[in-house]
Image 1 (cartoon, rainbow, N blue to C red):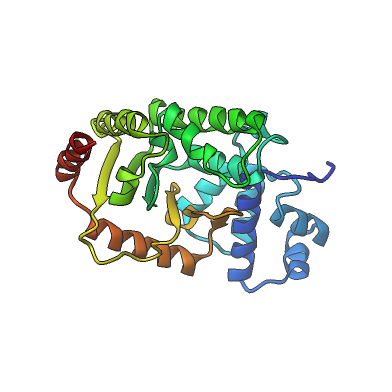
Image 2: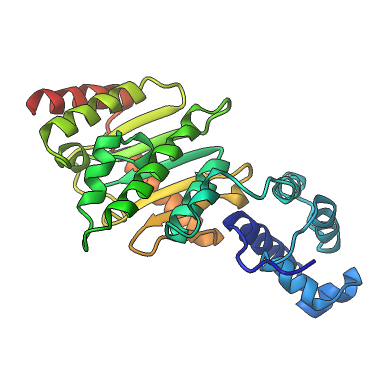
Length: 282
């Protein structure tokens, strides 16, 4: 089988987990290859996501590496048989890889927690608000690119409507409710959309008010995606070159930071009242 030139983010993650499993067993690539009776190139390519790995082979790797966490192994086996393509693939080549990877990770999350400082979460944005956010980019994006970005962002919202949607907690700073992207009318429409979204069973919206002294990582919007097992959690940092994090120590750091932000936020009920107050003040 020829090696993949551009493995997907999920294929790369499966490979990374196989590498972690091998390293936890204290084996080099050569030692693992000898135990498995395969070439070292197959091990390396599997760990880089460059070749496909079947569910059965995942279990063989786990047995060879003495991994006894059955829930973790089962989750990796499920990853191995996932459909290789999703709706986000139609945007490959026209949008940055970070946007494609975000949609794919988001699609597979069982729960997510987001902390945003200056704008409403993408999954909750109205089309008018999202368009206004994209328009503020510098240098100004090409109109055709804005249309693709807007289409991609609106398509991402479908994850909230699937039969078994992820449980979502959105933590927004008060500044995000007051920044008038697109003007007063657009913001009022967005605030009302937030109130509607807050009625969903799988959506919790909470605001961190200005009166709070500060929260960790206040300069960066952070998404924490929960996998089927904790080892498959992922953090996304919304920076100019978006970053996906899966290192255990860093996952713990960002998990703790979001816990702190959540403790500082208003309750869901008080947040709804707060959003109504901001809307009334406009």
